[in-house]
Amino acid sequence: MVPGTEFEGKSVEEIVKTAPDGGIFNNAGQVLNHTLYFLQFAPQPKQAEPTGRLAEAIQRDFGSFENFKKEFNKAATTLFGSGWAWLSADAEGKLHITQEPNASNPLRRGLKPLLCFDVWEHAYYIDYQNRRADHLNQLWNLIDWNVVAQRM
Image 1 (cartoon, rainbow, N blue to C red):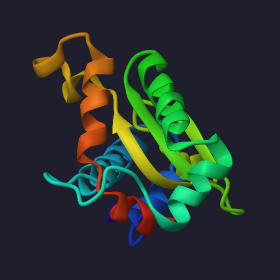
Image 2 (cartoon, helix red, strand yellow):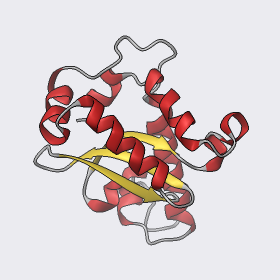
Image 3 (tube, rainbow, N blue to C red):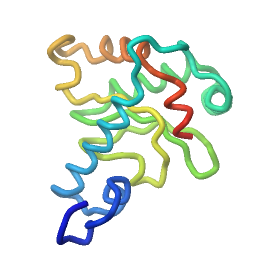
Image 4 (cartoon, rainbow, N blue to C red):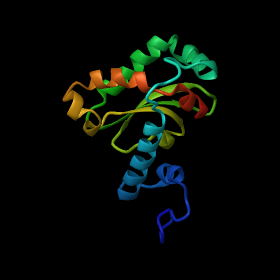
């Protein structure tokens, strides 16, 4: 992907996992994060909540969908500065909510990213100013849970 470097021919995911902090990592991370972010939205989602295996995992690991949303929103609103809130799965399928600063991604923790909310100011400031929580509450109305479930 980056001609003439050790990253030539590698996927963006592999670059995010292995690149040292710096320009290549930051740019690869933001490409991957924004790609996953925008692909998870639909203007008219078919369902308001996940179903199937994803719903079962959320129930198992967070107790309820409402509790999951509460915990996810807490992670997203309390992240200091710019970054991302993520729902990810570990190798055993257990779900985790993480805060990733700047361009970071759960891949760097050995997790599989499933759902993310962008909490960089550019994602919400024009419409919501400093009301990050209001922005996050609106994002739940756009999630295509089928896309998120396919990432498991």
